[in-house]
Image (cartoon, rainbow, N blue to C red; front, side, top):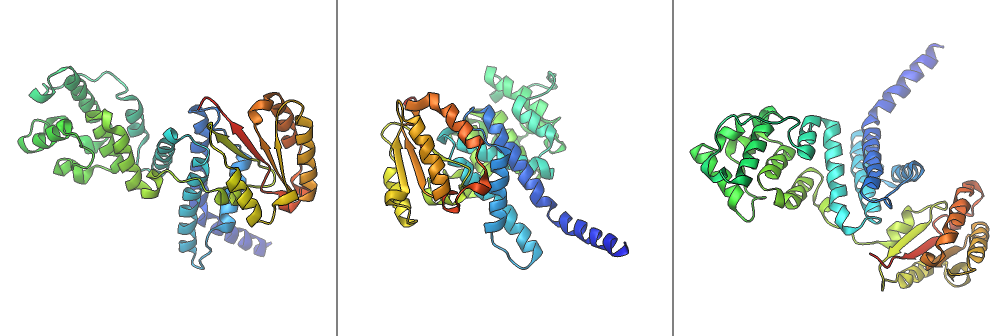
Length: 351
């Protein structure tokens, strides 16, 4: 009994070492789940997330030192999920995704407070009284809006104390005016006190108030500072990497604009994996092809072949049957060579 108690304590202590990994995974999952609010196509199941998470635990480097292992896992999981999810995002949404990751991480660590985040999203929670008169260069309509937000910002964090008053200071005021009037304010330093005391997110808050039209550039700088340059670069599509992340129970779906054709890359991948020729089944969907496609899939699950279904947009009514076919699959009964595919090519004419 005493030995069992000791063993239990050792297990709990070892498990606590990995709490940070679990926290990072949890944060990433909720960011990914929130993507569906941007576009209903961006829906990822918990099962998919867990499988990908487990895959990264298996494939990431395994240094002997625990601290090094934890650091590797944190970096690998964050980067791998960014690359993986970006494959399924429209270009316009990729920066938003990396920004959401950065903020979620900093909210979890306490580097960004909920109050600061709420202000960034909505502005002041109550109507802010005008405490003092705005300087002359903020006396027009837009300037007065900025002045009111600045006074509201002072209540969001102690680092903003005296912010509005600094706009009337001869030295700090000149810097603020330059930030407001220049064409490229993002890389300019704030007045000395705020440059040293404010966090990257607080600097982003200030720039959003002063120059909201430059927010995208400011967000890029914040993400680069917080996560690294790789998170502001649009990852090029890598079919081999997508293949390695896929599983037997998860189809690899291509959403293409007119004129795009991944077949050459798919055929090359099939040849590289010795799945070309009769082992790579290709079918163009259309009227009456649904049953044939279902047979291809069922047979391939047993034989380990690959299946490519083209022109799925011409068989929209069969997609419900395909969904049932997917939901009815049993992972343990599927051939190991088949686990990476089927592939669907969906051509959308309205992209």
